[in-house]
Length: 110
Length: 114
Image 1 (cartoon, rainbow over the protein chains, first blue to last red):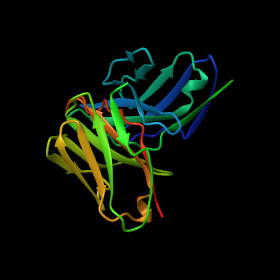
Image 2 (spheres, rainbow over the protein chains, first blue to last red):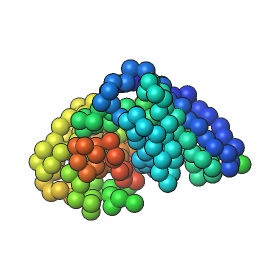
Image 3 (cartoon, chains in turn brown, red):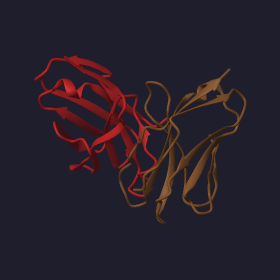
């Protein structure tokens, strides 16, 4: 699976959109981009995933660049409960395993 | 929330003693995983199971064994606990190989080995 690079930390004001970047320049054609988050002391939570099209669900939007070398997770109206570590993971569809990196610590500021 | 429970939630044990952690699911999902989480390392996969009696190693499997005799239960055993196994342990489940990227995690077990 391709390696990902995320900033170690970010701040965002409450009510604003939080945009979390991820670089995955070595991604291959059959690898998906997954996003998880982990709120302090809890188990990680699946957020969203995509291959090449932009995706949206009730939690977030995922924007993948046309060359697929980077992506952005968007939390449209951040709340204090969105404070967490966010993990970007690239995974081959046929791979049964996820490899977590160290993620981005997002802090929502009141 | 996915029906995943872990027991015990907290445990303190002494070096050299055996320890078994239990993960129980009510979702009838095929895949089950055990991870450990330590500061500076993120989550690392210990073992996983792709069916009853079918298991495989992850990246940090030394010192751990697993068993899955029923779909709903996945046991992680530390045969002789060491201080380096002090960690938070998470169980996860996923429905199928194709959906293995969508894993649902339990609440975790905090294990301290003294």
